[in-house]
Amino acid sequence: MDTLTLTRPDDWHLHLRDGPVLEHVVPWSAERFGRAIVMPNLIPPVVTTEQARAYRDRILAATPADSGFQPLMTLYLTDNTTPAEIERAAACGWVHAVKLYPAGATTNSDSGVTDIARCADALDAMAEQGLGLCIHGEVTRPETDIFDREKLFLHERLAPLLERHPRLRVVLEHLTTADAVDFVRQGPERLGATITPQHLLLNRNALLAGGIRPHHYCLPILKRERDREALVEAAVSGHPRFFLGTDSAPHARGAKESACGCAGVFSAPLAIELYAEVFDEAGALARLEEFAALHGADFYGLPRNPDTITLERAPRSVPDQLPYATETIIPMRAGGTVAWRLKSANPAP
Ligand code: NCD
Ligand code: ZN
Image (tube, rainbow, N blue to C red):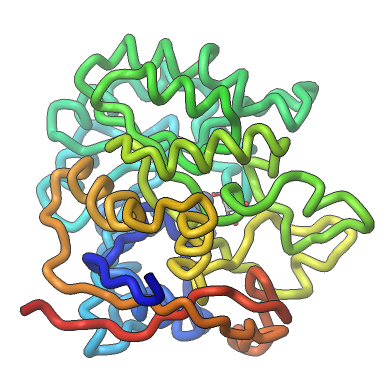
């Protein structure tokens, strides 16, 4: 099988940023994906439906007109999010989830939630309105080892949250551990999970062995090889609650190559191609469509995309760097090759 045509995929976890970089970031995703859940961790964060509307307009202005790409907006949950704001978000029709960042967990999360109990009313309103919660699942105690933060979140925070809000739909974002895979498998039907290309392709040696590689630094941090293997197994398993979310997180080159570099891997320019490599390597290409295009739409209760894309097994070189407004950005695999390429995007029949 040297070409593969699949229902157009969606990206269920994406950072697009704001301002002049939008036109350098959005087209990569729009070329490949039909829709994307757009993360709200701007400065200041997107906390109201009104802010989400304005941000959506700026994204659409940077979206190539013929792509048909739809940004699915999210609100940033804070200790002060009100049930009334949740009702506004649910009523507008284009906010599709609310994002929970534990305060201090990652890039631009200072306004995040300090104690999930403070959000109980907002979470009840979300369950009532059918609005899902996307979670950055890491504990944030500074004394907790960074490699243990996801594992500890599962039983300390996520299990009680699921119990306290029995009708809330939850997506655990960017899984990085075998523990998280097990937790999701054993969890209720209303618990889904996204998996990034970097966590499927790399382990922590790619970050730390033979020199520090700041472009492989992301949060949650890359884990062990056995974790990577568990993630691949979950992604290719056909289990309907695992689906594609790139967590493509652009930062300018200078912000990454720094004494205190930002977390985030920029995979948007080759995202679906990287997932194709993973599935090909696992002998599971026939399962790529479910993971990339069907499971997420079904979980979010949205129609599957009517159009398709065609991928071709043909190596493509990845540029050393790309333009990023007045700066440059280093994509994942920069200067290397990717084994698959996007051959065409095909309109709906
Ligand atoms: C994301 C970012 O840069 O916004 N960074 C990352 O390493 N994934 C934030 C996030 O999703 O944690
Ligand atoms: Zn993210």
